Length: 350
Image (cartoon, rainbow, N blue to C red):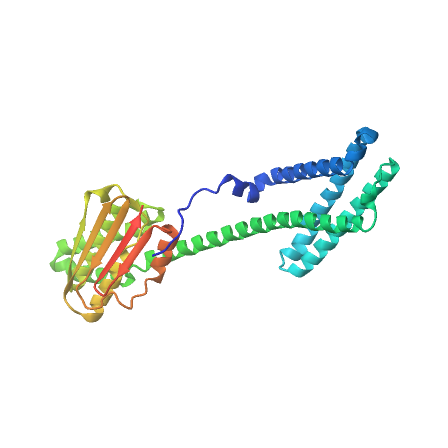
């Protein structure tokens, strides 16, 4: 049984992080954070001289904002793409630590000059306190900038994951197209040969075979292009398929049963035919007369498909990997299957 969450539209925070139309908003948020950081740092470091400095404090705010802005965009536009995104983690950390250390040292030296100019310099800016301040501030700013880098990494991971999902979807779709072509391809030639033989002596049977074959092909070529089809259409397709196989070989009888709920349920096309086709192929290999019993049931937002063929180990050693991939992709965490030697059961949450 596969276990995945239901697919849903991306939340706003994810769209804000990765969608191109939110790029300006992302930059504005970063700038707002830097403005708040610069205001807080300026008013905290210059708090003893706010009365003396007056409106000059806002020049200090502007200076801090510009230094943070240059550092952040140097990290975003230079260090991240050249090192972190290329998985050069050690080089990235070394260059980032050096950049942050130079930033904090430059800001501290400038703060000391400003405080000295206004004659409000205190003992905090003397050795060894100033060294401890630079180191602690470097660690704090490094932590904040690294958090921003992790956000960018998350954005690239989500984007790459989306591309992988799109490629997987294209791969699944291509497998569906192959499946349409591979639903017993020899059946077409066999039926045409059979109708040619029956045309003179049993024209009604030949006509019935051609009508069912046309319905079979129409469903494969047109109806299956939809993402979902009515379950009744799938059952009708399976009935036509088994009828043609039976008319050609005469090796088996079949019975398809379904409840009333199947008339309005939508499912992905060609999910159950692989199991039925495997049973038919195995019957041909064993050349034993038998029966194929199929049941479709709907209850509590689920569809249950059961295929039973009373031949020993008819479903063992069958490769159902492709159909499992389709189920994992189309119904993640919403299906379960059980395969025994004589029976297949598939339960899908719709």
